[in-house]
Length: 277
Image (cartoon, rainbow, N blue to C red; front, side):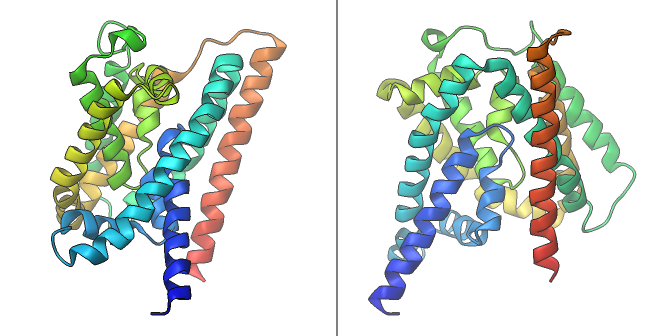
């Protein structure tokens, strides 16, 4: 491979990582799904699951990828924080739409290897579980940045890792449903290293420990796992829905929901059509 080709590959990997970083932090978007779209998912899972084999080659992938992810998270995090602080209702509704618009594609993907009626039970269980966890008095975090304990930070990192290695899962949306998203976003944008380290540890530990397990489960129980994940994603929408009123602001928020749903649905349909050609 020539040096020019090497630099081209590095730039493509870093660019894919940048988009994955945005996907990791933007609710309704899946970093894992972006990795699939960029053609990096299989290489990433193989590099993580077998990083000790051909170590130098794996690092040529993981280092530029990691740089891109960090840049995407740091640069886009402040943009999202601004909109949450100044247009919270509209921003939440837009992301709800983006998430809802992905569900038809997620369901089609889940059923691509066959469908059994009992998959619906797993879907229902995942939906109910996420809804219950997102209800006040169960597991909805309300303690702000100062209340983020090390176990919560480790768990948050693990959830982000979950969204990275499972395509279609928006880890940010799951964190939002649990009330953890905005405190974590503030932690990120203030570069609170003492809290960022446990997040990174939780993320790395989950990815390293479970990348193989996730690949194994998808290989041997694809439909069951996929419909359970569909349930988790669907259930994560309901706790995030904000209260609406009969006024112009709420009307605009609902319009953004519809627009976000149509946009994500159209983009995924276009990607699916291109893949079929």
